Length: 73
Image: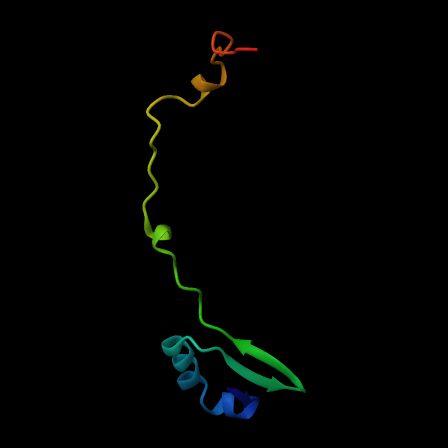
């Protein structure tokens, strides 16, 4: 839906609520160009997961591991 800036000014809060409820972007025509008001992106379920430290050791210990006994040419 494309509206004018005058219509936006008259119904600003109602139009913003409509964008949030429906998820449909609102297009505003201003000086021959189109501006869009878009709703925020939906959060992914993985974003809500708490961070967990699954390593029980010090990561620095893994830097100096000697793998020469495992190497086969």
